[in-house]
Length: 89
Image 1 (tube, rainbow, N blue to C red):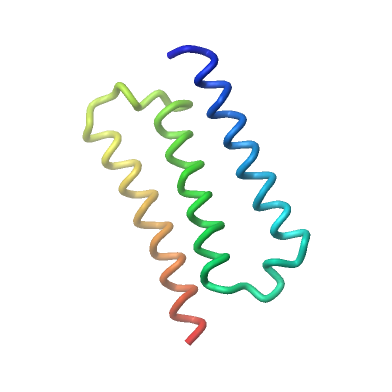
Image 2 (image 1 turned 30 degrees about the vertical axis):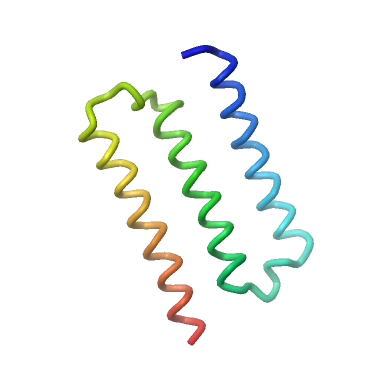
């Protein structure tokens, strides 16, 4: 992998972290709506996928490893957002 691509992914991870931090400090999460919560967890999922594929170097690993880790991350993220949505009813 080219170091430039890894640097770009790292910068995107930092940008997503800064954006979610900004959301928390501007009060956007004071009265959370499902759309904002889904956005925050969607960014968290993307960050997790970036870490799994690039920093754990599973992009070139057997597909079963990628499916297991990304599937587990997806399942947990979905359950959290679903629990939030159900709690808002």
